[in-house]
Image 1 (cartoon, rainbow, N blue to C red):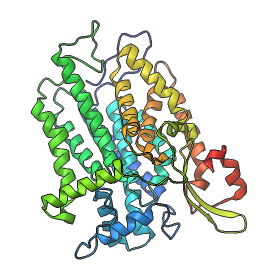
Image 2 (image 1 turned 120 degrees about the vertical axis):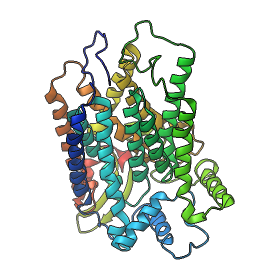
Image 3 (image 1 turned 45 degrees about the vertical axis):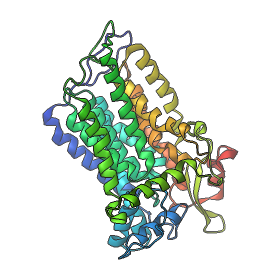
Image 4 (image 1 turned 90 degrees about the vertical axis):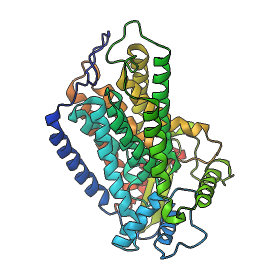
Length: 442
Protein backbone atom coordinates (compact mmCIF):
# COMPACT_ATOMS: atom_id res chain seq x y z
CA UNK A 1 0.00 0.00 0.00
CA UNK A 2 1.10 3.57 -0.62
CA UNK A 3 -0.57 5.65 2.08
CA UNK A 4 -3.63 5.21 4.24
CA UNK A 5 -5.55 8.23 5.46
CA UNK A 6 -3.81 9.47 8.63
CA UNK A 7 -5.86 10.47 11.61
CA UNK A 8 -5.23 14.17 11.31
CA UNK A 9 -7.22 17.30 11.94
CA UNK A 10 -6.46 18.24 8.33
CA UNK A 11 -8.27 16.01 5.83
CA UNK A 12 -5.98 14.86 3.08
CA UNK A 13 -6.31 12.94 -0.14
CA UNK A 14 -4.30 9.81 0.17
CA UNK A 15 -2.48 7.67 -2.37
CA UNK A 16 -3.90 4.14 -2.67
CA UNK A 17 -2.02 1.36 -4.37
CA UNK A 18 -1.76 1.49 -8.15
CA UNK A 19 -3.89 -1.34 -9.59
CA UNK A 20 -2.09 -3.84 -11.78
CA UNK A 21 -4.49 -3.22 -14.67
CA UNK A 22 -3.50 0.45 -14.76
CA UNK A 23 0.03 -0.29 -15.99
CA UNK A 24 -1.00 -0.15 -19.66
CA UNK A 25 -2.85 3.13 -19.12
CA UNK A 26 0.06 4.71 -17.28
CA UNK A 27 2.47 3.53 -19.97
CA UNK A 28 0.29 5.04 -22.68
CA UNK A 29 0.10 8.34 -20.80
CA UNK A 30 3.89 8.38 -20.37
CA UNK A 31 4.33 7.75 -24.10
CA UNK A 32 1.95 10.60 -24.97
CA UNK A 33 3.77 12.94 -22.58
CA UNK A 34 7.08 12.00 -24.17
CA UNK A 35 5.89 12.59 -27.74
CA UNK A 36 4.31 15.96 -26.96
CA UNK A 37 7.26 17.20 -24.89
CA UNK A 38 9.74 15.93 -27.46
CA UNK A 39 8.02 17.74 -30.33
CA UNK A 40 7.57 20.94 -28.34
CA UNK A 41 11.23 21.05 -27.34
CA UNK A 42 12.42 20.17 -30.84
CA UNK A 43 10.78 23.13 -32.60
CA UNK A 44 13.43 25.68 -33.57
CA UNK A 45 16.21 23.90 -31.70
CA UNK A 46 18.70 24.57 -34.53
CA UNK A 47 18.54 28.32 -33.80
CA UNK A 48 21.12 29.72 -33.33
CA UNK A 49 23.29 27.90 -35.85
CA UNK A 50 26.42 28.71 -33.85
CA UNK A 51 27.66 27.64 -30.43
CA UNK A 52 26.17 29.55 -27.54
CA UNK A 53 27.16 29.68 -23.89
CA UNK A 54 28.84 26.48 -22.64
CA UNK A 55 28.39 24.63 -25.92
CA UNK A 56 31.88 25.93 -26.70
CA UNK A 57 33.20 23.50 -24.06
CA UNK A 58 31.06 20.40 -24.51
CA UNK A 59 30.61 20.08 -28.27
CA UNK A 60 34.38 20.11 -28.99
CA UNK A 61 34.82 17.51 -26.24
CA UNK A 62 32.13 15.38 -27.89
CA UNK A 63 33.78 15.80 -31.30
CA UNK A 64 37.05 14.59 -29.83
CA UNK A 65 35.37 11.35 -28.76
CA UNK A 66 34.63 10.58 -32.42
CA UNK A 67 38.32 10.43 -33.29
CA UNK A 68 39.57 6.91 -34.18
CA UNK A 69 42.21 7.28 -31.49
CA UNK A 70 41.39 9.42 -28.48
CA UNK A 71 43.74 12.44 -28.56
CA UNK A 72 45.66 13.60 -25.55
CA UNK A 73 44.92 15.77 -23.65
CA UNK A 74 41.24 14.97 -23.21
CA UNK A 75 39.05 18.04 -23.62
CA UNK A 76 36.79 19.05 -20.73
CA UNK A 77 38.25 16.61 -18.19
CA UNK A 78 36.42 18.35 -15.35
CA UNK A 79 33.23 16.33 -15.98
CA UNK A 80 32.54 12.61 -16.49
CA UNK A 81 32.10 11.44 -20.08
CA UNK A 82 28.60 9.99 -20.49
CA UNK A 83 26.70 13.14 -21.51
CA UNK A 84 29.47 14.08 -23.94
CA UNK A 85 29.41 10.54 -25.33
CA UNK A 86 25.68 10.92 -25.99
CA UNK A 87 26.29 14.23 -27.77
CA UNK A 88 29.04 12.54 -29.81
CA UNK A 89 26.62 9.77 -30.80
CA UNK A 90 24.13 12.39 -31.94
CA UNK A 91 26.78 14.20 -33.99
CA UNK A 92 27.62 10.92 -35.69
CA UNK A 93 23.92 10.27 -36.37
CA UNK A 94 22.66 13.74 -37.35
CA UNK A 95 25.82 15.53 -38.44
CA UNK A 96 28.15 18.07 -36.90
CA UNK A 97 25.65 20.90 -36.77
CA UNK A 98 23.06 22.44 -34.46
CA UNK A 99 20.69 19.47 -34.64
CA UNK A 100 23.47 17.00 -33.91
CA UNK A 101 24.73 19.11 -31.02
CA UNK A 102 21.36 19.71 -29.37
CA UNK A 103 19.10 16.78 -30.17
CA UNK A 104 20.27 14.68 -27.18
CA UNK A 105 19.23 17.51 -24.87
CA UNK A 106 15.77 17.54 -26.45
CA UNK A 107 15.51 13.77 -26.05
CA UNK A 108 16.56 13.81 -22.41
CA UNK A 109 14.45 16.88 -21.69
CA UNK A 110 11.38 14.97 -22.86
CA UNK A 111 12.50 11.97 -20.80
CA UNK A 112 12.81 14.29 -17.78
CA UNK A 113 9.16 15.24 -18.16
CA UNK A 114 8.24 11.56 -18.31
CA UNK A 115 10.34 10.96 -15.19
CA UNK A 116 8.43 13.70 -13.35
CA UNK A 117 5.22 11.90 -14.33
CA UNK A 118 6.62 8.67 -12.89
CA UNK A 119 7.60 10.51 -9.70
CA UNK A 120 4.03 11.78 -9.49
CA UNK A 121 2.66 8.27 -9.92
CA UNK A 122 4.94 6.96 -7.19
CA UNK A 123 3.95 9.81 -4.89
CA UNK A 124 0.21 10.18 -5.58
CA UNK A 125 -0.72 6.85 -7.28
CA UNK A 126 -3.04 8.81 -9.54
CA UNK A 127 -2.31 9.71 -13.16
CA UNK A 128 -4.18 13.02 -13.00
CA UNK A 129 -1.93 14.71 -10.43
CA UNK A 130 1.10 13.05 -12.04
CA UNK A 131 0.23 14.61 -15.42
CA UNK A 132 -0.28 17.97 -13.70
CA UNK A 133 3.18 17.69 -12.12
CA UNK A 134 4.76 16.94 -15.50
CA UNK A 135 3.03 19.94 -17.08
CA UNK A 136 4.12 22.27 -14.28
CA UNK A 137 7.69 20.98 -14.64
CA UNK A 138 7.58 21.74 -18.37
CA UNK A 139 6.17 25.21 -17.74
CA UNK A 140 8.82 26.10 -15.15
CA UNK A 141 10.89 27.39 -18.13
CA UNK A 142 14.23 26.14 -16.78
CA UNK A 143 13.78 22.61 -18.06
CA UNK A 144 12.66 23.83 -21.49
CA UNK A 145 15.67 26.12 -21.90
CA UNK A 146 18.17 23.57 -20.60
CA UNK A 147 16.80 20.94 -23.00
CA UNK A 148 17.69 23.05 -26.02
CA UNK A 149 21.38 23.63 -25.42
CA UNK A 150 24.28 21.17 -25.61
CA UNK A 151 25.16 21.16 -21.92
CA UNK A 152 25.41 18.32 -19.42
CA UNK A 153 22.79 19.19 -16.83
CA UNK A 154 19.72 17.88 -18.63
CA UNK A 155 21.25 14.40 -18.89
CA UNK A 156 22.04 14.25 -15.18
CA UNK A 157 18.55 15.56 -14.44
CA UNK A 158 16.78 12.89 -16.49
CA UNK A 159 18.72 9.98 -15.03
CA UNK A 160 18.39 11.45 -11.53
CA UNK A 161 14.61 11.84 -11.81
CA UNK A 162 14.23 8.26 -13.00
CA UNK A 163 16.29 7.20 -10.00
CA UNK A 164 14.11 9.22 -7.64
CA UNK A 165 10.95 7.75 -9.18
CA UNK A 166 12.28 4.23 -8.66
CA UNK A 167 13.32 5.00 -5.08
CA UNK A 168 9.95 6.51 -4.20
CA UNK A 169 8.17 3.52 -5.73
CA UNK A 170 10.25 1.18 -3.60
CA UNK A 171 9.97 3.32 -0.48
CA UNK A 172 6.54 1.98 0.46
CA UNK A 173 7.11 -1.59 -0.71
CA UNK A 174 7.86 -4.42 1.70
CA UNK A 175 10.47 -5.72 -0.76
CA UNK A 176 12.07 -2.68 -2.40
CA UNK A 177 15.09 -4.56 -3.74
CA UNK A 178 14.36 -4.25 -7.46
CA UNK A 179 13.17 -0.65 -7.25
CA UNK A 180 16.21 0.37 -5.21
CA UNK A 181 18.53 -1.44 -7.63
CA UNK A 182 16.98 0.45 -10.55
CA UNK A 183 17.41 3.66 -8.58
CA UNK A 184 21.10 2.89 -8.01
CA UNK A 185 21.55 2.17 -11.72
CA UNK A 186 19.95 5.47 -12.69
CA UNK A 187 21.98 7.44 -10.15
CA UNK A 188 25.19 5.88 -11.46
CA UNK A 189 24.27 7.09 -14.95
CA UNK A 190 23.41 10.55 -13.58
CA UNK A 191 26.79 10.81 -11.87
CA UNK A 192 28.47 9.69 -15.11
CA UNK A 193 27.04 12.81 -16.74
CA UNK A 194 27.89 15.27 -13.98
CA UNK A 195 28.91 14.77 -10.36
CA UNK A 196 25.90 16.74 -9.18
CA UNK A 197 23.98 13.59 -10.11
CA UNK A 198 25.37 12.14 -6.88
CA UNK A 199 23.27 14.49 -4.75
CA UNK A 200 20.02 12.55 -5.15
CA UNK A 201 21.89 9.29 -4.50
CA UNK A 202 23.23 10.81 -1.29
CA UNK A 203 19.67 11.70 -0.26
CA UNK A 204 18.60 8.08 -0.73
CA UNK A 205 21.56 6.81 1.28
CA UNK A 206 20.78 9.20 4.13
CA UNK A 207 17.09 8.24 4.14
CA UNK A 208 17.74 4.50 4.20
CA UNK A 209 20.54 4.82 6.77
CA UNK A 210 18.40 7.02 9.04
CA UNK A 211 15.46 4.63 8.90
CA UNK A 212 17.68 1.62 9.57
CA UNK A 213 19.32 3.46 12.48
CA UNK A 214 15.94 4.32 14.00
CA UNK A 215 14.82 0.72 13.57
CA UNK A 216 18.00 -0.43 15.29
CA UNK A 217 17.13 1.84 18.19
CA UNK A 218 13.59 0.35 18.16
CA UNK A 219 12.11 3.79 17.65
CA UNK A 220 8.31 3.91 17.58
CA UNK A 221 5.77 6.70 17.32
CA UNK A 222 3.18 6.53 20.09
CA UNK A 223 0.35 6.80 17.54
CA UNK A 224 2.10 5.14 14.59
CA UNK A 225 0.18 5.06 11.30
CA UNK A 226 0.64 3.40 7.93
CA UNK A 227 1.18 6.80 6.32
CA UNK A 228 4.18 7.71 8.51
CA UNK A 229 7.48 8.37 6.77
CA UNK A 230 9.11 6.02 9.30
CA UNK A 231 7.74 2.67 10.44
CA UNK A 232 9.49 0.02 12.57
CA UNK A 233 8.51 -2.73 10.13
CA UNK A 234 9.61 -0.99 6.93
CA UNK A 235 11.63 -3.19 4.50
CA UNK A 236 11.97 -6.26 6.77
CA UNK A 237 14.04 -8.23 4.24
CA UNK A 238 16.28 -5.40 3.03
CA UNK A 239 19.70 -6.22 4.49
CA UNK A 240 22.88 -4.20 4.71
CA UNK A 241 24.42 -6.08 1.80
CA UNK A 242 21.36 -5.20 -0.30
CA UNK A 243 21.90 -1.58 0.69
CA UNK A 244 25.57 -1.74 -0.35
CA UNK A 245 24.74 -3.44 -3.64
CA UNK A 246 21.95 -1.02 -4.60
CA UNK A 247 23.42 2.29 -3.46
CA UNK A 248 27.19 1.78 -3.61
CA UNK A 249 28.34 -1.10 -5.79
CA UNK A 250 25.87 -0.81 -8.67
CA UNK A 251 26.18 2.98 -9.09
CA UNK A 252 29.98 2.73 -8.89
CA UNK A 253 30.21 -0.01 -11.53
CA UNK A 254 27.88 1.83 -13.91
CA UNK A 255 29.72 5.11 -13.36
CA UNK A 256 33.20 3.68 -13.91
CA UNK A 257 32.09 1.73 -16.99
CA UNK A 258 31.52 5.00 -18.85
CA UNK A 259 35.23 5.82 -18.54
CA UNK A 260 36.38 2.59 -20.22
CA UNK A 261 36.06 3.94 -23.80
CA UNK A 262 38.46 6.75 -22.82
CA UNK A 263 40.93 5.02 -20.51
CA UNK A 264 40.42 1.33 -21.14
CA UNK A 265 40.98 -0.76 -18.02
CA UNK A 266 43.86 1.40 -16.81
CA UNK A 267 43.38 1.76 -13.06
CA UNK A 268 45.82 4.66 -12.91
CA UNK A 269 43.96 6.41 -15.74
CA UNK A 270 40.62 6.00 -13.97
CA UNK A 271 42.02 7.27 -10.68
CA UNK A 272 43.64 10.27 -12.35
CA UNK A 273 40.37 11.11 -14.10
CA UNK A 274 38.52 11.12 -10.76
CA UNK A 275 41.24 13.21 -9.15
CA UNK A 276 40.98 15.79 -11.92
CA UNK A 277 37.20 15.97 -11.68
CA UNK A 278 37.39 16.39 -7.91
CA UNK A 279 40.08 19.05 -8.16
CA UNK A 280 38.32 21.08 -10.83
CA UNK A 281 34.92 20.96 -9.15
CA UNK A 282 35.79 21.45 -5.50
CA UNK A 283 39.22 22.84 -4.73
CA UNK A 284 40.47 24.65 -7.81
CA UNK A 285 39.97 28.40 -7.81
CA UNK A 286 37.69 29.32 -10.73
CA UNK A 287 37.39 32.84 -12.05
CA UNK A 288 34.16 34.77 -11.55
CA UNK A 289 31.47 35.14 -14.17
CA UNK A 290 29.02 37.89 -15.11
CA UNK A 291 26.02 35.69 -14.37
CA UNK A 292 27.31 33.84 -11.33
CA UNK A 293 25.05 33.71 -8.28
CA UNK A 294 25.06 32.26 -4.77
CA UNK A 295 22.92 29.29 -3.79
CA UNK A 296 20.68 31.18 -1.28
CA UNK A 297 19.45 33.40 -4.13
CA UNK A 298 18.37 30.63 -6.50
CA UNK A 299 14.83 29.98 -5.18
CA UNK A 300 14.14 33.72 -5.47
CA UNK A 301 15.38 33.84 -9.09
CA UNK A 302 17.56 36.83 -8.32
CA UNK A 303 20.19 36.36 -11.02
CA UNK A 304 19.37 34.54 -14.27
CA UNK A 305 21.90 33.26 -16.80
CA UNK A 306 21.82 34.82 -20.25
CA UNK A 307 22.76 32.10 -22.72
CA UNK A 308 22.21 34.23 -25.84
CA UNK A 309 21.53 37.86 -26.72
CA UNK A 310 21.94 38.61 -30.44
CA UNK A 311 20.64 41.56 -32.40
CA UNK A 312 18.87 40.25 -35.52
CA UNK A 313 17.23 43.45 -36.78
CA UNK A 314 16.72 47.13 -36.11
CA UNK A 315 14.48 46.40 -33.15
CA UNK A 316 14.66 42.60 -32.95
CA UNK A 317 16.77 40.35 -30.77
CA UNK A 318 17.23 36.61 -30.39
CA UNK A 319 17.46 35.87 -26.69
CA UNK A 320 17.74 32.81 -24.47
CA UNK A 321 17.75 33.32 -20.72
CA UNK A 322 17.60 30.67 -18.04
CA UNK A 323 15.44 32.43 -15.47
CA UNK A 324 12.63 30.14 -14.37
CA UNK A 325 8.93 30.88 -14.44
CA UNK A 326 8.19 33.03 -11.37
CA UNK A 327 4.56 31.89 -11.40
CA UNK A 328 5.78 28.35 -10.70
CA UNK A 329 8.97 28.77 -8.72
CA UNK A 330 7.88 31.57 -6.41
CA UNK A 331 4.62 29.76 -5.70
CA UNK A 332 6.63 26.65 -4.86
CA UNK A 333 8.17 28.32 -1.80
CA UNK A 334 4.98 28.52 0.31
CA UNK A 335 4.06 25.07 -1.02
CA UNK A 336 7.30 23.70 0.40
CA UNK A 337 6.54 25.39 3.71
CA UNK A 338 3.19 23.57 3.82
CA UNK A 339 4.95 20.29 3.04
CA UNK A 340 7.29 20.96 5.95
CA UNK A 341 4.36 21.65 8.23
CA UNK A 342 2.63 18.42 7.21
CA UNK A 343 5.77 16.35 7.71
CA UNK A 344 6.34 17.76 11.19
CA UNK A 345 2.72 17.63 12.35
CA UNK A 346 1.36 14.52 10.60
CA UNK A 347 4.62 12.70 9.66
CA UNK A 348 3.35 12.18 6.11
CA UNK A 349 5.61 10.10 3.91
CA UNK A 350 4.70 11.94 0.71
CA UNK A 351 5.50 15.33 2.26
CA UNK A 352 8.77 13.90 3.58
CA UNK A 353 9.84 12.62 0.16
CA UNK A 354 9.01 15.92 -1.54
CA UNK A 355 11.11 17.80 1.00
CA UNK A 356 14.00 15.34 0.85
CA UNK A 357 14.38 15.46 -2.93
CA UNK A 358 13.92 19.20 -3.15
CA UNK A 359 16.22 20.31 -0.36
CA UNK A 360 18.81 17.53 -0.71
CA UNK A 361 20.04 18.34 -4.24
CA UNK A 362 19.65 22.07 -3.56
CA UNK A 363 21.38 22.41 -0.19
CA UNK A 364 24.21 20.12 -1.29
CA UNK A 365 25.64 23.15 -3.10
CA UNK A 366 25.96 24.94 0.24
CA UNK A 367 28.48 22.30 1.36
CA UNK A 368 30.85 22.70 -1.58
CA UNK A 369 33.88 24.96 -1.18
CA UNK A 370 33.71 26.44 -4.68
CA UNK A 371 32.32 29.97 -4.90
CA UNK A 372 31.25 29.91 -8.54
CA UNK A 373 27.59 29.04 -8.94
CA UNK A 374 24.84 29.50 -11.50
CA UNK A 375 21.07 29.40 -11.43
CA UNK A 376 21.02 26.27 -13.60
CA UNK A 377 22.50 24.35 -10.67
CA UNK A 378 19.03 24.79 -9.16
CA UNK A 379 17.43 22.86 -12.05
CA UNK A 380 16.86 19.53 -10.20
CA UNK A 381 15.25 21.20 -7.18
CA UNK A 382 13.24 23.56 -9.37
CA UNK A 383 11.93 20.63 -11.39
CA UNK A 384 11.01 18.63 -8.30
CA UNK A 385 9.20 21.66 -6.88
CA UNK A 386 6.35 20.86 -9.27
CA UNK A 387 5.50 17.90 -7.04
CA UNK A 388 5.32 20.16 -3.98
CA UNK A 389 2.83 22.36 -5.80
CA UNK A 390 0.66 19.41 -6.81
CA UNK A 391 0.81 18.04 -3.26
CA UNK A 392 -0.51 21.32 -1.85
CA UNK A 393 -3.06 22.05 -4.58
CA UNK A 394 -4.77 18.66 -4.07
CA UNK A 395 -4.44 18.73 -0.29
CA UNK A 396 -7.44 18.50 1.99
CA UNK A 397 -10.79 19.38 0.42
CA UNK A 398 -9.32 21.51 -2.35
CA UNK A 399 -11.51 21.35 -5.46
CA UNK A 400 -10.03 19.50 -8.41
CA UNK A 401 -10.28 22.55 -10.66
CA UNK A 402 -7.81 24.45 -8.45
CA UNK A 403 -4.88 22.28 -9.56
CA UNK A 404 -5.74 22.61 -13.23
CA UNK A 405 -6.33 26.34 -12.89
CA UNK A 406 -2.78 26.65 -11.59
CA UNK A 407 -1.50 24.57 -14.50
CA UNK A 408 -3.23 27.01 -16.87
CA UNK A 409 -1.70 30.01 -15.07
CA UNK A 410 1.74 28.39 -15.23
CA UNK A 411 1.22 27.83 -18.96
CA UNK A 412 0.35 31.51 -19.41
CA UNK A 413 3.52 32.51 -17.57
CA UNK A 414 5.57 30.18 -19.75
CA UNK A 415 4.00 31.61 -22.91
CA UNK A 416 4.81 35.15 -21.79
CA UNK A 417 8.46 34.13 -21.32
CA UNK A 418 8.76 32.22 -24.61
CA UNK A 419 10.33 35.18 -26.50
CA UNK A 420 13.32 34.99 -24.13
CA UNK A 421 13.28 31.20 -23.84
CA UNK A 422 13.70 30.17 -27.49
CA UNK A 423 15.99 31.98 -29.92
CA UNK A 424 13.87 31.14 -32.98
CA UNK A 425 10.93 33.15 -31.61
CA UNK A 426 12.78 36.46 -31.40
CA UNK A 427 11.43 39.52 -29.67
CA UNK A 428 11.51 43.28 -29.68
CA UNK A 429 13.49 45.43 -27.31
CA UNK A 430 10.20 46.72 -25.94
CA UNK A 431 9.08 43.22 -25.00
CA UNK A 432 12.51 42.44 -23.61
CA UNK A 433 12.41 45.49 -21.33
CA UNK A 434 8.87 44.65 -20.21
CA UNK A 435 9.89 41.12 -19.21
CA UNK A 436 12.89 42.28 -17.19
CA UNK A 437 11.06 42.99 -13.94
CA UNK A 438 14.23 43.63 -11.94
CA UNK A 439 17.57 45.21 -12.72
CA UNK A 440 19.36 42.06 -11.55
CA UNK A 441 17.69 40.12 -14.38
CA UNK A 442 19.59 42.08 -17.03
